Each structure stands twice: as structure tokens, then as C-alpha cells.
Length: 65
Image (cartoon, rainbow, N blue to C red):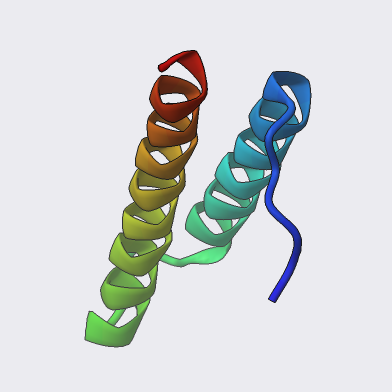
């Protein structure tokens, strides 16, 4: 696994990259041909983003204690 990202600027950069990846996947999907796997993949990417946001927020709270 990778190392922990504790720097706020690095965290924001990471989240921006993941969001851009999501947008690229979304743009690449043809709505007429989208299937359940495509939708599941988009949901998984959003879940990963949400998880990382929580993780970064929790680290910030732990560091301020």
C-alpha cells in the first residue's frame, strides 16, 4: 500500500485527480450502451472518493487533538 497523505495540498491534489478520473470515465460512457457494470464502476469511484474525504478529515481531527 502507499504511504499516508498528511499534507493538505497533497490531499486536495489527490482528490482532484480522482474526481477527474471519475469525470473521464463518465464522459467515456455512452448513455445508450451503459450497462449495470458501468453504473457499478461509477458508484465504486464515488464511494472511494467519499471514503478518502472521510479519511483525510479524520486525520485532520486526530492531528488537532
